[in-house]
Every structure is written in C-alpha cells, then in structure tokens.
Length: 284
Image (tube, rainbow, N blue to C red; front, side, top):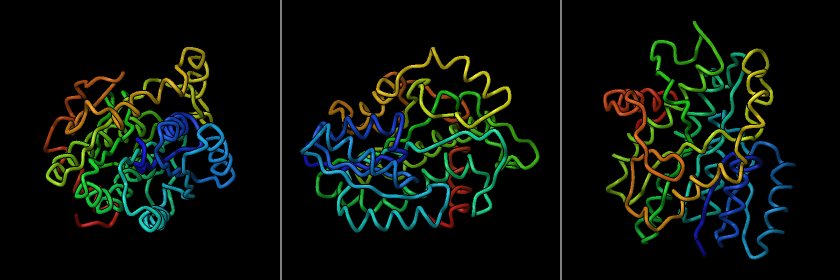
C-alpha cells in the first residue's frame, strides 16, 4: 500500500478506525472522515504515533447531509488528485424515526444514500487513478443484516411503519444492491466495487438505542468480536493482490459469499439505482 491514497468514512471509532490504522501501518496515505472534529484530531494523532511515516488527512462532515457530502467531496478532490481505495463504512442505527436536513429518514440517508452520493462524487477521481494504472477499489461495508432486509419502495423512509432493525436491514440491503449495480457500470473504467460483512462487532453501534433492541444488544455485547477483527474483511478486500479484477461480490469472513436472493435480483438493483440517484439529485 506504499504510496497509495485511501479514504475511510466513519474513521473515528470501531471498524473504521481499525481499517484506517492498518492502512496507515501498511504505508498508505489515509484520509479520515468523521463528524466530530475533536475525535478526528485525536484519531489522527494516535494513528500518526503508531505509523510515524504515514500521511494522515482529516475531513469533517456529517454524511447524513447531502450538502455536507458534496462539500467534503470537493475538499477531498482538491487534496487528492488520485484515490486508490474508498471504504464506505460510516453508519448507525436509530431506535426512533428521525429525518435529516434533506427530509430523508436518517438511517437510509446515512447508511445507504451516504455511500451512494460520496462514491458518485469521487468517481471521476477513482477513474483517473485507474487510467494511470492505480487499480482503485471501492469497499462498501454492508452487513449480514441485509439477509432479513427488504426494499419497501412504497415506504423507504418508514413513514407508515418504522422499526430500528427494519430500517437498518433495508439500508444494508441497499448497500449490497448498490454495489452490484455500481460494479456493472464501472468495470469498463477499471474500478472494482465489492461489499463486505464485517461480523458482529463490539463497537459504538447501537449505543444510543433503547427499548427491546437496546436491551438485547447490551446482552449479546460480551460475545461480539473486536473491532480489529471486524476490520479484517474490509482490509482484505481493499488490499489483497489476489483480488485484482474481482468486482461485484459480497464477502464475509474474508471469503466471497452468496448474498440474499433479493440482493441478486437485477431488476431490484436497477430500480434502487434509479430511486437512489433521484434522492441525491443525480442523473447518472
């Protein structure tokens, strides 16, 4: 990874932090994206101490806001003429239905549309990297929760029926569908796109949820895997030379795995692609 430029969202804790730390230790220049300036500065300092020769950049943005995504993408493009690895990792689960400044349900806005818009905003940079022989990769951190997910096109925002896990599973299914639709479109440009299940990891995920879900999560926490272990599949898909040219796949525990039947339905992939682009104000 020496000399390669990587960007990790949700990099101030958990899987994102461990992913960024490992990339820096391998010699990459790493951009950290997070919404808390203090946490960003602290994480950057810690990573620099662990990897003194690494170059670390920080970018503050709330990735549930489309204006924020466009702004930070502009900063990234200006700072990084090339981008070899984009790890879309930022996400959360919310026990109550909330909407963003764009009027979109927060889980869908952050966990799915955040991936879509940031990727599209940086796609030309990734394509330019490919043209110079850089073999860029996009890694979308999804979840095995997608197996229980369903895209409710008539109620994407949960206005009629909302549940924390229902919204999260739908968004994670969205990650997989988006990855497959994206991979078809960018394969000819030399860019690889894959998605991963990191495992069930002991991070800050669900720390602010209450009710039955919050109680259940607190009970299983002692059995969860560490963030360092949870980052391994993302790192493998982002860096392994054995995966050169591999695109449009779902990985779990470091290996390709068959995703849900709905995720493999090309008609659903294409419909979600169109709807997602409409929601982020893009035409292609």
